[in-house]
Image (cartoon, rainbow, N blue to C red; front, side, top):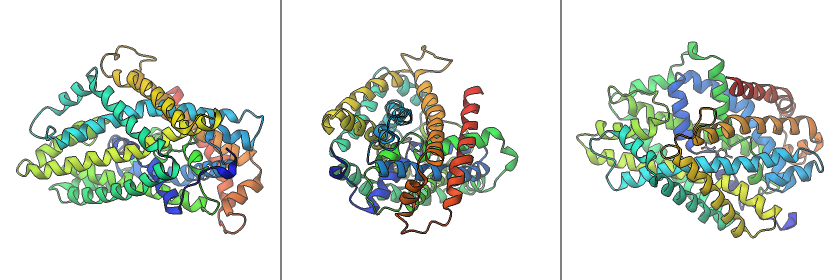
Length: 452
Ligand code: PFF
């Protein structure tokens, strides 16, 4: 397919909502509150915001410009902009990362689907041991596999409809719905007794908690949450129209992503503090063990309120996860479709089958395959470690070096300033961040994660 025949997103709002859909996901609602809870609250959030501004946004703008300029999926973009060089491996790493992330992310997404269904059927209410409930579910030999497969299939259905009729249409409906649910849940959470303590935890920074590890965790979280470092937004940007303002789009996506993460904290912590004895530092179990306890204990006298709160929360998680799995799937589908000239449907089917197969191993690593360890990690943890902790930071570092040092400055300027039509006041600062700050900072996350 020649560049001119390539599809585009149909509108600027579609561009922003699809990209924000990729960014907003389990990273915001599941992972961010865990990190905040474990790393001391508001101080972590401040460091996180600095990482978003000075690392995340510049790398995002770079991904956007690489994608829009090349008009190719991330696996092919570097072949267009730097033909015959080794830069193509940066793109290929992104495609491999998409398969791997979808493999394990699909498992947690499957859990959210199961919790949504269990909530809807009323089985997530009443007094029970929610730790046992969670462990039984994730350790079962078939349930998590089934839900993971169902989730990836849902993703497949959107992807085969295409960029405009699938991804864009879906994002335009789902993102506003998601934001609406979040706002309703924040109001509910604020009105719970004892919520002020949870708010204080989020708003009162304790800088004595900020050490090297917290800074590095915040950087890793920013990359994962903003979907940068693996060419996901590069692939989406290859469908951007010529008149999309890349800096404004990156700013809007970063704003929505950070806003949702902080609001997720505003939902979860006041709720957790409203029940004596529950703690905000429960790690990954926060959403799947602590919260069901909250829904049950806090609303003992009005169980229907607990039912609605719980159902809305898990619907929110499913929607957020789905808009992100769609973007991961698209990276791999677009690559197979364009590189091997497979039809979009065939390419999507291959991606779905491969990711489901990887997902089976990740899902079973909490039960049947729990004994298999590599470097002390289960298969699931290994996938998470290799992608989120190694491939994304490495990808981000190479993307900033590529744009800051290798790519012709004229191309960067044309894309970022819309052929001189826009005045971008901080262009020099942007280049400085890309050339020096991002590579050095990201290299330090990388070294930290590798040698800790
Ligand atoms: N940003 C997504 C989240 O916060 O859940 C996860 C993600 C999606 C990471 C797409 C990377 C990616 F390419």
